[in-house]
Amino acid sequence: MPETLISNLLPVQEMPERIWSDLATTNKKTDVWAGLKGERVPPFAISEGRLYSFFAPDASNNPFRPFLTGSAPKTEAVRDWLPHADKSRMLVGLLNEALQEHAYHLRIRNLKDNRRQYFCPIYDAKPRQFRWGGGGRPRTVAKIAERPDKTKLGIHYSAKLRFLVLGVRVYLVIEPGWMFTSDGFTPPARKTGDGPVNKVRREGTECRCPSEPVDVEYALG
Image (cartoon, rainbow, N blue to C red; front, side, top):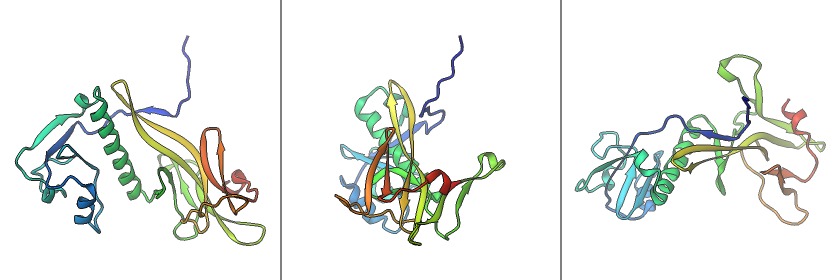
C-alpha cells in the first residue's frame, strides 16, 4: 500500500562528479585563507600534504594555484569516496562549505559560533519575503517587530543545514526553527542565568530567544 512519509532528510540528486588535488605548498588552511584575504574562498581541504577542491589544478580560474606545486595533480570520482570513512567525511566538509558559499550569494548568513544555523538577515528594515517558483502568496521569512517597550526585535525563520553520508548516498539534513536579532542582523549575545537571552530547545531545534514572550507566528504573518 503506498505511503507518504514526511522527512527533513533530503537525498542529493546532483553534485560535483570529481574532486581534484595536487601536492600543496602548505599544510595549513589558515595560510590559504591569509593568502586569499579579501576574496571569497571556495571549498577546499588539505590532507596528507595535498590540497583538494572542485577546481582542476591547471584551470585558469582556480584560486588555489599559488598553493599547488603542480608536481602530482590527481582527479578522483566522488562516487569512489563515498564508501570510505575518511574521504566521505572530507567530502561532507567540502559540501558544507559549498552550501555556505551558495547561501552567501543568496544573502543568507550563518552564525559565527554555529556555522550550521542559517537565517535571512534584514539589511534595510524591510521584511524579507519568499515565493515558491516566483508565484503565489509571498511568505515572510524575517521582519523587524516591536517589543512592548517600543524597542526593536528582528524575528527570523532559520534552519540548521548540513550534509551527511548514509551508506553510499549523500543527504541534506534540514532542521527548521527560528531565531531573533537585535537589529535584523546581529544575534543577541549569549548570557547565563536570568539575562535577556535564553537558549530554547523545541522539537529538536535550537533557537535564540529573548526572555519576554514573543508571538512568532503573529509577528511573521
